[in-house]
Length: 272
Image (cartoon, rainbow, N blue to C red; front, side):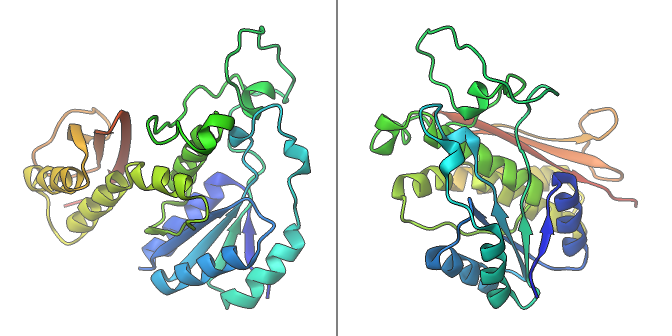
């Protein structure tokens, strides 16, 4: 049987949270489709590491420049589903969103970049003026492929961050064929999401001391070569700091990894 296909990001997030409420762990394998044996080996690996696996199929315009023909990227979505069906046994779902960028509420339109030499991707060229935030790992993205494809790694880091925030995986599996891309993703504060997940799990086991929870998060970040900007636990409604978790809170984290400052948060709802 072919895997379930989810196209809406809110529906994808609801599915992930429903799986987690059942005690299941979630793996993520990001792809742009046209799956080959290398992709399938990553899916198999994810299936050994998590209870269920999300395979994203999304051709990311943010990693293509306007001189690269995005429309000619190969696609065989029905064939991809057949290949995944042979693996999954019901443990794989496909996330195939139409668009993950903000085009300002309008249709994608060609825009004039003014001839100023500014590096743009197909998102900006396609009228994506509502999308203003990019994730960059500046030192690692400069050499190798970054010389000839200046928007590529910015686009990869940004879309992977989006997928992490939507799918909320416990495990993500990437290949090393593009070694530079793999290293950049490794450095992208995966430790932040890991530390937040650990804190949430600790709360579920009864830990309510914010001092203990913040110490746990800081230890995780520093151990991953991060430099902590802040770790705060605040009330969801007032955003005021709390010392003990007695109701809904949000844990907010900001940390530097090299020259990149990343932020993340996680909501925790509890009634004592």
